[in-house]
Image (cartoon, rainbow, N blue to C red; front, side, top):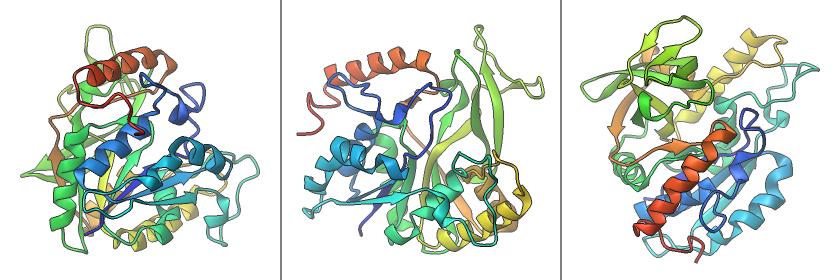
Length: 303
């Protein structure tokens, strides 16, 4: 069974202060999504789909074009596809607000990949590091999931995903007997110097051991009709708001409540890290150097 890795790389990275998806953070200038691709291929994935902005195509081919020359674990050539997240995919009934410059969020991003994804897929952020164990667990789960009504996610602890340098948004999960019960997209989460975590919007303290979604989702192709329906409902409610976004945890939570999805919660023994703010960069660079030095990654990921 072929499995796809779908990389959402069209975000603007505004809080980071630049295009962090293509920031050469590794010891030899590797970008974070190269680690995701490397780990996914050795976990058994055989196809990579990049969701990008139209103007990123040439740059992405220069950075990651070598992936099409790789071989999957089953001996077949790795398939590479590029899809664009832009306003051309927005339904005709919706008029784009004049002040709208940003994409419509991760539901829209994945929906833009519908024509390129015909197999079970793992959907990730381009600017996060998830670790090999997460991809292995997801590959195993995708191979045994039925086609309709099921999905999966890899969860991480909230305390390991926040930043001292500013607030973050996380999907805080409630799980029951290994399945997701609900996921609440929570904005303005601040890690305090004493290690506590606070929702600045409400002032409440958050459980540091709460499981959160870091956009590491596993979906079957049957997810696309649900995405389309959800996105169209979102646009009807959004009106002319130039900054409204529809995020994957919101869609998953809606389908959980409606009984449209049952989502396995997978835990990973690996390490997550990412760069929300530019001040996070050095810690991530040091972590990657240690992983190379320990032998987890070869000197050259591109070889």
